[in-house]
Length: 229
Image (cartoon, rainbow, N blue to C red; front, top):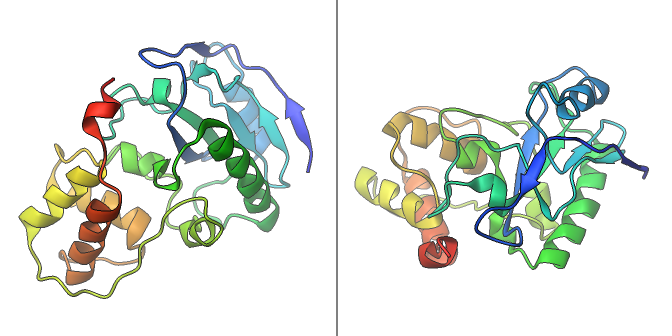
């Protein structure tokens, strides 16, 4: 696995915190890692991430982990609105339609293990861009293998057969407790949740959706007071 330093000029100091407490995964939506690298390292583009992983598994280090990269945009998780200051951003070279290859996923697993251990970040704080930006972003998308990361102890992926009744208010309340920004249209929230935890499912809110959301709220409630400090 090759690691390459490719500094981006697009970063600032972290604000309100000295260390990251979450990781956000993205896809580049480009045809190649080189195209993404050009954008992420361009001062004109005004975007960046801490890392970019290419299709062949090469890890490009773009911004020091102690610094604030510009990858999350307008986002929210729990009590946090400045996600960039609280996170490490990882861009995955993928066009948004193709499966994520073995070399890329293998490098991602190695990198995540290092980051989570170094900064003591819990696995439920490994998030997708779609989690923190409902309706605005859909990456890393339905093709991304969250279950694989979960089996490796690097993320969470909750599977559950529906045992709770369909209750829209409870579903929204539980997702808020887990961390989602629920101040969006309900269908937008449902789509964002399903992209991560119930992919390939369409239609009305189901018992499975409600049960998974409840499990998330019970097992991984966000500490809003801590997030605001």
